[in-house]
Image 1 (cartoon, rainbow, N blue to C red):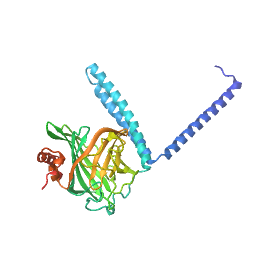
Image 2: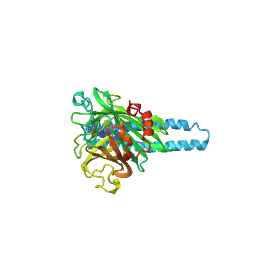
Image 3: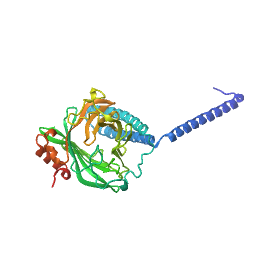
Image 4: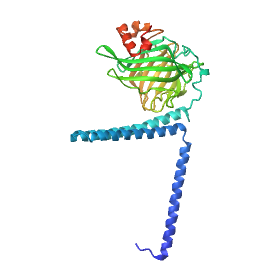
Length: 374
């Protein structure tokens, strides 16, 4: 189209005005986005950063996998490999978004800005020798319990409090060993062996200082996922459980983004698993709450929708866990069978162990410090 000279100036002026208007709008939009970003809490910004990290990791894995796929010699296998890689990337990207939403939900629940519990682990606030001052979680050396877990109680869990302490950030943290086993061909096989480090505050609160989690598959060690220690790699401690919890309160139990992000919420101060529907499966017959348990909900934003109701009986401790998915019971239960103040409790018939001496030998191999004895 030919533009007449008389109209050319008008055209230029209009174009300049339009450009100026567009730039102003863009600048205003950026300003609004910047203000919106500035209004975000550090907790929310952290969720965004972890979302970006998640997406980068997915792409890295995707491109590495496709590089392997294209080297397959059979065309059908090559195409199947590439299609599976693409499908996995799509699912994982969706999971990244779900994790960001779950982390933001935690930010709202905790009304949290920056999680920086300065002085949380201050030696002046903790006892030197953790004991049983917390009615819901004993750190008295020798305290041991056996539980069964899973939809069909396929797992056996043995937890014992050792007399060992590990100093973390100047605080004595009691070493508690937690071993999860399954039976295969009438023999116990390790699923997870964990050394947990707990400190006891002067007010009785149990603080979570860290853990070393050894995860097994078919009896072989495969990874240490979930391990953390306060003060290492920017990890921070949290409170495992309070000595005097308040209904409706919530807090972090541990903090290492991507590895340890457990959160606990106190649902009821006088909970009863039969009072909220049959889906929970009712009381633990070995240690019934009878309306006297503290009920909590524990969850991890890296596993959106998954969680667990837990019941703690004063003077006994943890007695029952109920698995959750999207807030609904899944049928998985964790029932404490027996508890005592030494490993001799393994001989108690209520523990349901057919051959305690053989089990103890296996436990000794998995954790000599905790189970081999003098």
